[in-house]
Image (cartoon, rainbow over all chains, first blue to last red; front, side, top):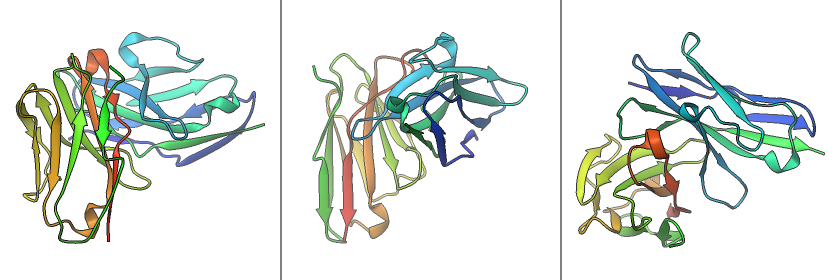
Length: 109
Length: 115
């Protein structure tokens, strides 16, 4: 069975500092990985997908199959990045996402 | 189309009562998902529909839970004989195809409190 682990419940950084959210997964096949974000009083929304290899709002994430990780990074955090972030996995051709427990990011001025 | 809609936003019910939630997905999305989220946890998969067919159910979905999507449009999730452990946020999401290609669009959720 697949599992997603986000070891940090809370990350507190100062504005302008780098931020890295860790995500580790366990799945024996080829996974598809996602990051979702939930801003205060808003619904959960897709931030980025590893297959797109895109940078969204300055965030990037690289799938490392050797380390089974999909860490989310941003070199210069902004106050508007304060939110809950969830890493999620879908197995290839699968039909459901498995979410991690989430990491709350607090960017201080 | 304003996205995925869920109704009600909040529901408080007494233990033992039945409750029903509704989800209206984005109209052109043929896939619909129900998730449950408890405090401090990520969303947990409950069930999934492709059009009107319920194709997968989690073991979390006990026999007190039933979900329908009668015409492949809106969906309902019913919980019978509610228990305090059912208190959670119930999230609905929809997708036009596989999650791998499109991701999910989530609704705002229904927060259930069983007292």
